[in-house]
Image (cartoon, rainbow, N blue to C red):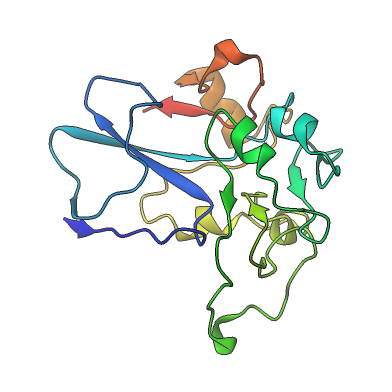
Length: 192
């Protein structure tokens, strides 16, 4: 068993803690401490779904969030006014508001920062997962894939017929969250 504690404002995906046999995202717990896993629970990481029809983009009054040509939804932290409309509009609860100034020791800050990706976000802005643009646009994998100890995450181009993700989508029981909303997520879940 592992002890997991989450600190608000530093993670970009939420872990859904739900009763086994249910899939009610609105009732699942997103913050928890204690020993995990528990026999009567299942855990589902939920991060930005990189929607093709992202509701967060439409509600931003200053256009600080938009969808890039490659489909990644980004936030310009210099433009963000912290109104939190995007946070409220996201049906996946995938955005975080920075309530306080980040307290990151200088020696832990990555010197190779990217404007739209891995830079330290200031207090008063909303942040989200960007699939590590500073890495993926250089042909590397997102950090969560490299860090995942179980290999449970897969990243790739679904348009490439020879890609690992394409094989999974064609051969496994894959699904998206809240399909009925019409946001068209580019983030898939599958049963092995």
